[in-house]
Image 1 (spheres, rainbow, N blue to C red):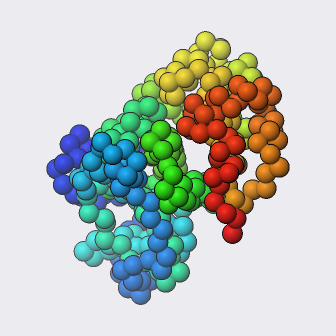
Image 2 (image 1 turned 120 degrees about the vertical axis):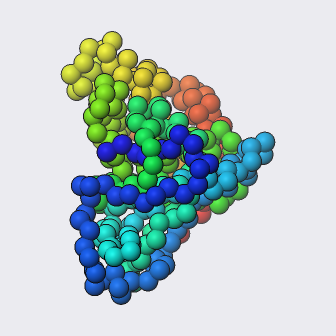
Length: 311
């Protein structure tokens, strides 16, 4: 299922259209009649507003230039039409532009609302080889797993906490914005294999999951190529097309992201920056500090000092 990115987002709200393989439409759903128009709990992350806050030279997108992702974390939601309702479960995501779709929520519902600039979402599709299709508010065919949902919510909470701190730098903000867009699209699992590029995107997803599962190990290019069933030259081409970097640089980048998240998470006990760096395989500490600052704009020691107080 391709994601519906309009060629001209300024044309106004898109018609709501669900996937044919999604949860079936149930007429006169009893629980839908008992549901309310608002979720019991809603968390918001407005990356569009942060564009103006963090990058003063850029004006915030207007509503026609932004996408809203509604992530159902708990309870149920019901997507209404004139005579029917589609029941959505925890782990399902609605993504679209313009006005939000008309939804009803169960009394125990919990929701994340994430606004993403259209330009950022489009760049994420281009980088990963996903399709730019026509129109519609779409949702994932079946709920993502509990682990996938927890990982997504953890990222959203981290970015929300960073943005609320008031110390977010432009370089780091753009890194976060693209990370959120990519994570949303990966979790949607929206694309069908329609070209070699899309096949590459699926392989890249497998490689990313493999690296994430072994992030503290010494992952060699040779081992990664063997896992993918590719020559090292072919692996290099996949990473160049999908991530615009070499396999070695990509692995190092993912490790740095995990170090950053660890240093900034008040729930994680950290003995020292050195201990965290060594834990993720960085043995040359001077070089590690240079790479960290070039990636995030601050030194790792500054990240540790700037972490929010523990709850």
